Image 1 (spheres, rainbow, N blue to C red):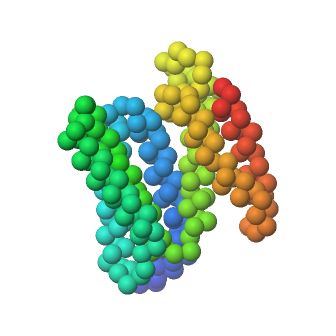
Image 2 (spheres, rainbow, N blue to C red):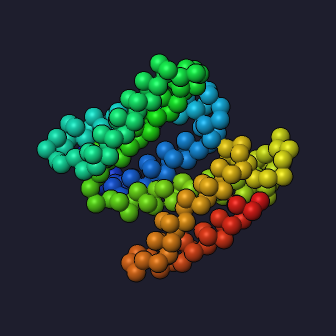
Length: 219
């Protein structure tokens, strides 16, 4: 039994997830979840769910950074302070707003933006030197969302049975948002394809992202 436990521990040590890969998958998973669950923020119920999840995850990441890296310098503190001021101003605008309910919704949205920004600063403190993994994660999420949008036109019977418009709208329900999502992946794809390091096959595959952006924007 002791020998079996020893082998199990050895195997667990070998399959230990690389920190960079963990960051990449976490970023990609969170962004993809926001895209598919949030529906572009057009529906209050789904948008509220995404905002709650973002604020909770951001709070956990910031708390971990404060506990584990209390002595590390706070890079981006000025920008964070400016965003805090903007969030406070947005909240105060409820007092003089012609439509306080809409201002309240926008305040919650801005608070989620603040949480995501603060979590990004905290993540730098927790896993320094992993900026490439973050770009990989962002690009991976954008690829997944864009491919899903294109797949709804390739196989509408499976993925978009109730679609009545010819334009590409999924997963947001608004075609301009799908095109903008695909366009956001152009800078990291260009970086990935033009760099002189890394696996050559991965660099070459990145070049295929730009035609997909054109297809997503044109449909």
